[in-house]
Amino acid sequence: MKKLTLTFCALSVLASALYAGTENYSGKEKEVLQPAPPVCDWYRAHEWDLDLWGSFMFSANPGRFDVPRVDPFSPDIDPTVFDTTVGAFVEPRSLNPNERINLGQLTKDQLIARDNTFGGGLDLKYFWSRYFGAGVEGIFIPAKTNFAGAELATLTVRYPINRFAPYAWGGIGAIEGGGTQFRFFNEDHTFTSGNATGEQEFFTSEVVQNKHTRGIGQLGIGFEVRITCHVGLMADFSWNFVFGKEESADRFETVISPAASAGGLSPITNTAINLHPGTGSDNQDFGMARFGVTLSY
Image (cartoon, rainbow, N blue to C red; front, side, top):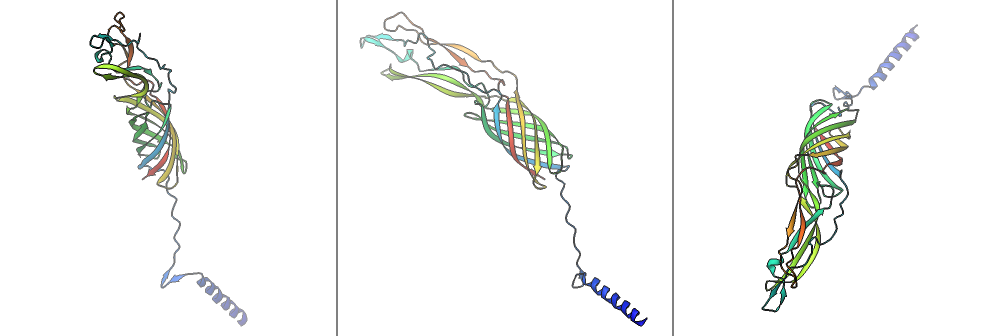
């Protein structure tokens, strides 16, 4: 009986020693293991998002018109007068001005003056809930020889799924700049002692810029993926509608070159048709694919 009692006491002391060996002390304080921090909420209510993006833009009106490279003046005879001092027919400056005629529109697109371009922009949004947000957007559009820019107010709806969030949005605002490419006929004279002694005819392709503000509407869909709680990647596509009142239609005028005899013939009048482009919002719609980064706070 004494042996059994001693054995039981020895086992109790050993168990107590083993249990005490599993506790860690630092001085008089016991070490406590802290739990891992919780995973962040990827998409939050009352969240500010700043998107910085580059874009590929393509015109809804691609292609070009075939504008012939021809001298528009008919019958295209330089006016002359007889100069008694030299005893010959000459071409005085007054009857032979330098000529510049707009032959017609080259690009069907009347915003970027080409089929596509690369641009960029940014937008700032505030989400008052996890699903809905409002914001502002700025678009930078490099056109053929100048720039266009748009500013919009937007409304966004998203559906967060863990790190991912598909979204759709609409916007409305204003757009400025851009233009349309036209073909011009040019004739420059060289004058000596007030008379034309030579001329050069050539054709140029030039952009006539838009100098009025139009409206713009936007509809788009896309998705975002969060890399961290505050940084994400976004990609989307939008269609942009340019609208506004037609301020003035294209106008054609007959340009009359001064009448005079040519080599002793009856008086001749050269004429040409010159295009004065109108201002409006036709043929300016475009698609836009955007890729960028989202900074969330």
